[in-house]
Length: 432
Image (cartoon, rainbow, N blue to C red; front, side, top):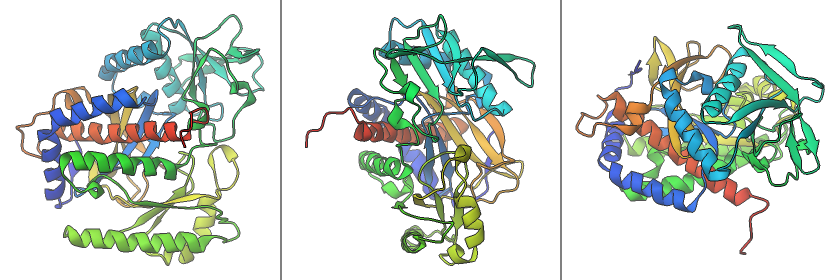
């Protein structure tokens, strides 16, 4: 199902779409050269927003929890990508220890874990689940709504290696975003591959650092295509030492929000866009959808103070209050499915797009986050779209072309994550 772009402002995005399609050989070569220099995240998902006049990522998740939304026909591509990823890291691997998020027990998340086990199992690995929950001391069965079962086991640390009883893995795949901290059991492992690395977790990682890297990538890509990087890059700023519960540090947030609204207004005027700009104020770490607020006028930060305190003091898993925030240019979504606002999400393993889906929300507006309770999901098969775009088709008229464009922007965000992880790697050599 292809959502209908209801905006009339399709000319700029069609121009961007046409430019990306006609530049496809140069784009794919550019990506190839980048991947010769940089290591992609093991797996990732990217939330995109398509405004008609702009297409940009707004969040990049390095511990994706939505693989259950991939269409079944995408599984062979996902398995192939998983094989390639594992072969690069540990060619002789036969055992994979998957560590899920012990704080998420909802059905969607458990189906995601099941899908990951299926993908890596079909890639030729023995996959078992080990939990960070120290209250689990014996193998425990979780029953899913469809009657299927998952068995989680207590982790077993033996000197510098992590495994399960009678199970010694070459590779440990984390699906816990570490927003609650760095568990000692995962630290100082020897001769085992921990993927993603610990510094990819939200204890260390910051969205502002990611979008700083993305801005660098977007400028390089825009130079390649001879275009304005703003068309694919959301402006951002960051504030630390903010206490929403005490209304402290809000001057920084208000100042950045006001300045960004002014910058977006100038860009809208430059492109003849008759829209009211907005910014998103969100927690600088975490991906739970909490700690997020739409600001259409800087006065919103006064008028909605009570709401802001409520939203901005809740972190994933009951972690500490939010003290660092990202102020990000708001990208409206004008895609809809059955009258519900929709946004595409691109899923990747290694450097390959393996599929995606639309997140929808019938009770959220085009300028609000759709990652909220009540969201729905529509599967997309990206195989034809990312592998076989149709350059001769009229811009905006071909679903494969539109989805190829989504895949390109998703891969730009993945490349930015590679830059980001290299820059924050505590074990990297310093040449300063």
